[in-house]
Length: 81
Image (tube, rainbow, N blue to C red; front, side, top):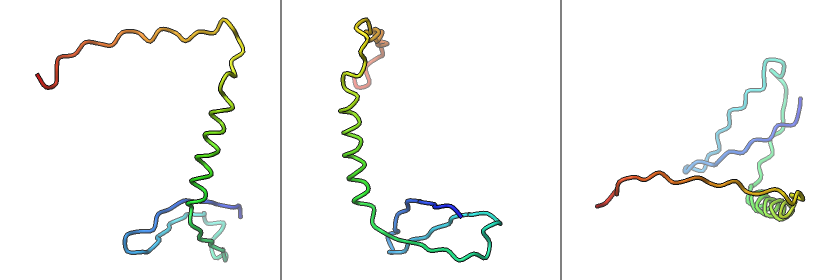
């Protein structure tokens, strides 16, 4: 059996309901479920994302690379005249 990680939210009633189909090959096997809050995971993910974005800055070394024109916005009528 492989390691499976899921994220789920505890309901307003304080009950966590999980449905995790593992297949017939895993039927009648004992498993271990570990519950831990994901706040620390979310904050580390934000930090990792910001670090990744920072590492990408200036990564295009081709001096001829230019951002293409973005085109023209279409003209629409006023929403609130």
